[in-house]
Length: 414
Length: 149
Image 1 (cartoon, helix red, strand yellow):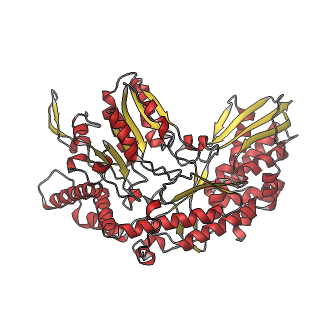
Image 2 (tube, rainbow over the protein chains, first blue to last red):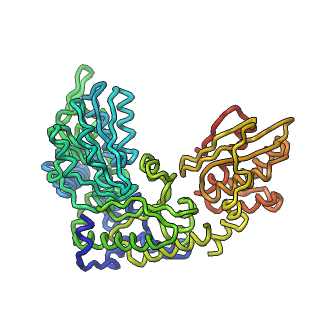
Image 3 (cartoon, rainbow over the protein chains, first blue to last red):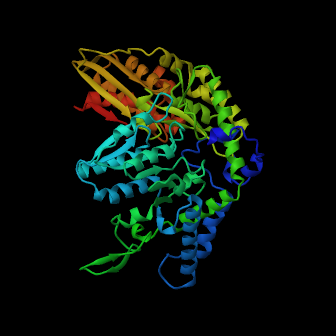
């Protein structure tokens, strides 16, 4: 998708957009901040910051209880945020939108609740590209129930080896859980192809959308997935809030995840009946401000010229790829045809942690490490990589500064 | 960029490029694995102790410039020292790198003093202390591995 848009020439006023993000206007070690760690978390537009403050100053109350005015406003705004999320990913109903803490909790919810229906010997298919958040919950389920995990390999380009996919299915396959876009490599996976193979075997599909929602138009109906998980803080919203989309028929069949207030209809010591969707999966007081902030972030994104923003990101990715390839001793890890705007790389004789420190001293914020994707690092035989991940507020000048600093790092350390 | 060269001083870069005593030691009395899970740095430290004296010390591993240089300089510093002297050095290095107000004078530590610059980089302190914790584990415990967590 980004590759297709890379030839587009939609105008994009990046300086105007940058003014929406107050945090970007600061100096780091004497240089203007170049924030290139957007795959870790994105910055928040002023409207989101204002929304959070406004909520706590004027509307703070618990939701779905109390008949006073503040409770009414808080509940109304909270549920309006759910509707914004529904619209944003084109779910059929808000009954399919469960608020959670983030992608990690969303996947844990599915592993825990959907997982209760799995028996010893049942199989779950994962891929070698997954973030630990889409590996460890399934390993915990394996310890509890004895399920079998099967892993789709990746190729040297950093793409999924789709030829191997059909062979991983068996009569015991119960779920395919795969990332929409890789946080360590940037690869956008061909979800339509993957889902159609799963459909042939009547196996439901969970998509980890943490890295996809900030960069792609996500339509859960078009993707035809059963679960879609993402985090608010990677989508220009607050930390502590995330979303699990679940196909209604799937969620209806699943037992509750956590017990407590909010998720019940009636409670007695003999028998408790549970609330309907989606509240059955939202025990306890939710992150009300976070949800409202996420809703506001989505409205902000809807107010942008999304095609122009994505075209800008595609040009940033092209520019970064070309500029970094020219740096001596540098090797880009992950050369998929279709990528979100991030570049993972290693440099001969310069360890990613030294790289992170040196870049930081030039005001460049990048991530250095294993990116919570240790199997990916193992596959590429590197202990860690440096990763520059972009958003629509990044500039070509920031990429040029990165390339300069990389040359400096090599001069200094190699 | 003066500050960067404060951290990456020539002596540190020399040890990073040409680590000393970078070898396995088949007749070591202790071999301990040190691991920094945050960044994946991994080293194995070998010591040969007899009569409470560190007769030989070596290491192998992979890591950033700071962790490699620190380990390399450690081997030069503790070789030939008594166990007690090596432990005092560990305590001094720990103080120098991690205390809010170190009482240790970097100048009194010889070559090791160049690592004092790491103090200004809180995210990197564990890179420098990894080999020292591994040494401490080798000399004071029966454990075969240690992490910086």
